[in-house]
Length: 283
Image 1 (cartoon, helix red, strand yellow):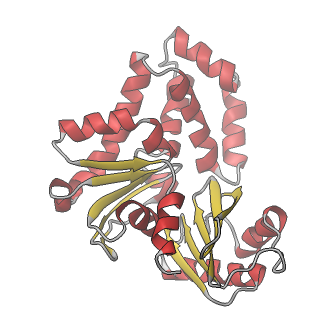
Image 2: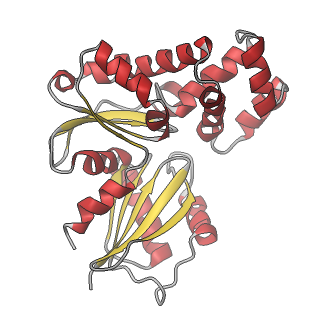
């Protein structure tokens, strides 16, 4: 009986699913994987600690992995080597996270696909492949609209004393008032993008406050301005979104689509359900 081990990985978490024809999917979860922030040895150690694999208990004929930071051929090769070594499965296929989003959201239809999670990206999907995608500058120089990008703005507003008394207190209740300690922790963190994205929780907790709404709208509008609006297909095709930020602030995305007269398709939190449906067809 054919079976596939699916993986959909962002910088914060990885969803795994063992998919076999006629059987109920089996789900696993581990921390996020990003080959731009981790060495092959680090990823292997993480898998050994968080997802030990027993062939007698869980049998897979192949692996299909989708992940953040795995868009280039060199990074795909690195991930494939780690997966083969850990799982002992020779047939291994690696794709970037944009392909995961495209297949999950569009299947075999055309669409504009965006990821707004810890990081961000956008592409035009022609129904079978990613036909156009601008370069990603990553969490340091890009990632507009992402959790890392928005979290950075939250930290700046607090540290620069831009917040009013209500939001200042709300920040301190969540994260404390030691700015130097926060900065030290940020620069010592092995995953600074993940750390910055944690500050988005303040905005989730304070929806309705005018400064909260301004930050969310400004940051998401930056994503529309620098990414979505640069594609001519955005005015012809539906816009699809996935990721924790997109899902949490879907009302703001809907308002921006109305403002720019763009056709909004589906917004989902995670691509895994769509990927299961996509790959079930091949079993």
